[in-house]
Image 1: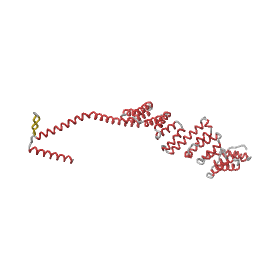
Image 2: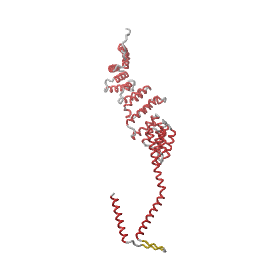
Image 3: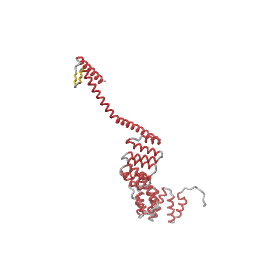
Image 4: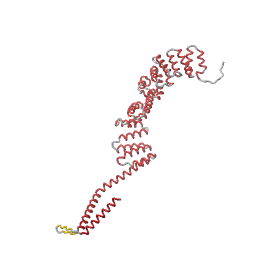
Length: 407
């Protein structure tokens, strides 16, 4: 406001000053050119000069404006088109989030404009997929790939994800392998490859991918361990149940088994897998190998199933087997399953007195039918028939109702 007031005062002062000079005298201007003679006062000449300059400036400005009008109009149209495209894209994404897939696809395709249209095509492909139109979704993915150079990774990852959701696991794997070849160290490519192998139950491939994922720290360590356990479990189960010769070859099974990392081996969830594997070795008659593996497993997984199994296998050195089991008793002196196992190992060493002692100690801790059966068998072999019959009278550990019996 102060600047305007100052300008107004300056103009008034200049006008007053000009008026003062005009009153002092009109002046005289004479311009002669060949036969042309122009005579006028100084002030009229000054006004005509100013008017001529302004007219010339206005004409030049008009010509310049007319020359730049097409470009300006084009820019205005482009800006207006971009604004409309953004509006349609936003609306399409809102429809997609709301589950209105048909309208979402329509708005996204309509809003595909300029360098950013790949986003529209990718989102429209997702909408078509959610609507169940897989073929059209693939067509839109192809348009997305053509629309922008250098977007192979983004388009490929989206394609793999869509194929995974459709349960097209072979196609998903093919897409992931192609991306792996182009981008070998990309984290999300490796993660998608892991998902494809898992979906196909290709557990050996899962185990091959996991080390790189661990190196890149893509998965939490707990998740990685759980996945390793699952992979090894399924791989070993497949080997056990298959009709291949490897399922009947203890050495082939042990080769896979010994490749399991120590951290995975020690995990709590590993115990059921260990039991299934050792039990299969026992069924194959590989008792010495089973005993050796149990000695490695039991310090980390002291479960009743595994401890009981240790009394069913006969190792290469039964004396060593006994000392190992006895050493475990230091930390678990009243464990009934361990006492039962020790009794059986003593029978392997033909130490019958100790075997009877361990069986009786086990029975005092837990009234177990299996322990009573072992004691009955041992009593009978020692001609202690009364004790054996007493075991039978007690129902081998089972509680029975009081019913009349013949005398």
